[in-house]
Image (cartoon, rainbow, N blue to C red; front, side):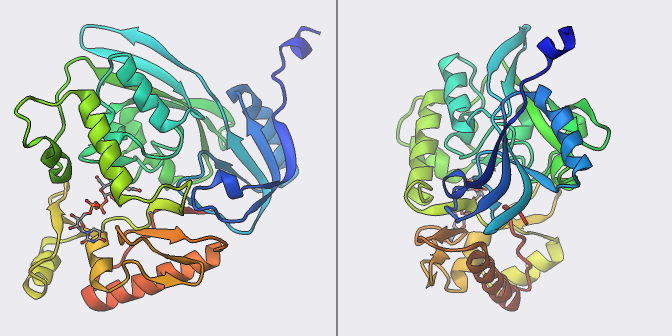
Length: 347
Ligand code: EPU
């Protein structure tokens, strides 16, 4: 009797749920069986049930980094696990535990309101906390992995909850252990470790430029506001025009290839990479191929940033992927560089 009383409430099932308003690209997509996950306790029995029924499944967070097909057969798990709490503090750090379904930008704003600066360079990135570590979101010289202490996830192979410390998450540029093992782990909670000593991170020229005229050092809140302003100017608001942020990763090339390219294209935009190689600005490569602002039917390339593909309304995943293919072909032809698609293509 007690076990019935303590059993978690089953995840809410909605058959044939339209996902157009649950993906930032605004693609028309229907989930055959959508389950809303509000508590991690719901996962063990649900995953078992889906396996018994031989139903394929995948998770969906904020839908800001995915390309959805018109029909998602099987189960789609909508991760809506909320809650955030300060769990520990010592002289050097504060630890914060956050549910995977919490909105990323709202978390960043909350940390600043609670005098926990550190995440401000990552303001206004769309999506959820649980999705952030998968692609190790990054902007303006900061990557989320630096601030992650550990991640709690349900391991669908071991059928058990696991806690992965930062080292096990293998964070790299737009990459992680979770991204390398798609559909194995369901992230339920992220524990952040925020150092108490704070320093402005202004190595990114676009951001530093904002503070050049004022002599005083900017506060975390001023950096937050500046990042929001830069992003709003450069990147389309998904509520107005569908998009998934950068559509391609900035490609990393070896030094020989870089030197070769630089001879041919002296204006090539690139940065030193942490691995000692060279990271090229994919937006520049695409721009040079004449794609900026180009429209192909319902989809196109954003007019202010060639790295962002947009849905002008009514576009499908095929339209987006065909445009991506022609961009990849043009960049490969002109620069001999292969662009890799950044968002997850769900099937
Ligand atoms: N550029 C062009 N034409 C363009 C776009 C860019 O010439 O149309 C050149 C410019 O010279 C610019 C350089 O490319 O200085 C780099 O562009 P930008 O500063 O806009 O940054 P990015 O490399 O395009 C990356 C991230 C963004 C992140 C910004 C800021 C990737 C794939 N993208 O973009 O992340 O916000 O840096 O740090 O690493 C995202 O992942 O969705 C995303 C928006």
